[in-house]
View 1 (tube, helix red, strand yellow):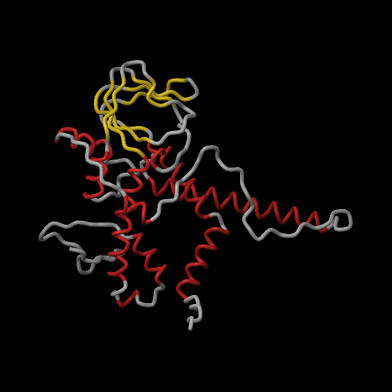
View 2 (cartoon, helix red, strand yellow; view 1 turned 45 degrees about the horizontal axis):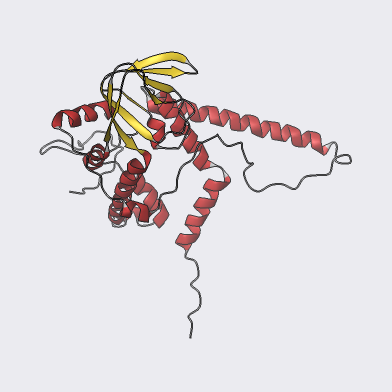
Length: 297
């Protein structure tokens, strides 16, 4: 005898409610746009930049609300002339940015990823580490992730005068300049140059967005590159492993017992690894504290 279908749990309902909220308010697109602006601007104070960015969005939201209220007020006075339009419960469709896409990666994609190892000497590894140390897309990586990224980077060479990337073309590689120098042009006008230790093409690691500039080899050039697929699979695999480990830790913390699973996963995703040397002070009695620590090893 077939068993009756299982009723959805409160946890599943909460997760669906969260997903519906995100879709209804277009949160995913807002965050994508935010990352794009952050990577383009590369501000010295990213938190200040983000605060101002969201303040602008809030002002725009308020402006749209006022405009809708004004429009509704005007339409009420013309009810006899204009038949009402049924309200749309879904967020209004916006014109999509041309060429912007973000592939969906699944857990199977991360598991099936075959680690790439392209040999590099110590000097090259040190140069790569220095080149990406202040890049927003790499700043959050732990030692293992950074090592996997370095191993997957492949060599690219160009002779002087060759075009490395062309503005408007789709891009999927990020580059670090190992030897030589490149010139950067936007709409045909020279903007800047990038020399050894510099990097370009960050947005290609997040989205398949068209290149925002043309980059040409000013001298003979040696680059190290990594493609979007490798970058995202490496990070996704690492994120899934961390999420599982952190979620198990959090489920045993008494003050977090009342959280739903999706809420614990949200907290897990917000955790950042911190390392301390033997004998180093982590917290000091009497000092204000706003950090929560979990010992992993």
